[in-house]
Image 1 (cartoon, helix red, strand yellow):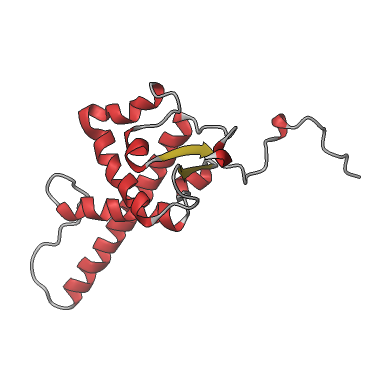
Image 2 (image 1 turned 180 degrees about the vertical axis):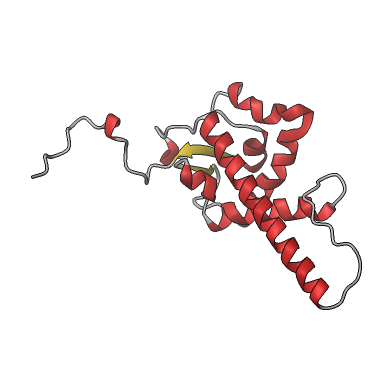
Length: 164
């Protein structure tokens, strides 16, 4: 797309940190909801042990939750999750003007493919000429610095006006 011409690609560090923050938010929300449901079940008189684990190997619903969380976060924020907002980066579709729901969920599913083989899909950032990882290529997306954020003062050519 011509709109992407000249846009700065997001760094690996900012992408990794944003993903870590998003994963932390997802885990806190998942645990909070589980604790709330467990408390409600106990108050309703349900007997038994209530386990609340974000475990991908034993609980299928953990994977479904993460795919929905990441997919809906990208879709609702049009490419900006909470972590991406903090690091001033965004996911952009290469085929649509706005991130579609399918592209967002497809990208979230692609995280699984990027995780395979000890995370080599994430490391393909360093190999691909446009810094696209496996999940970027699956969903036809690219991650760029968000141009809506004001430039840092070091990037400006003109000194700010004096105050006073």
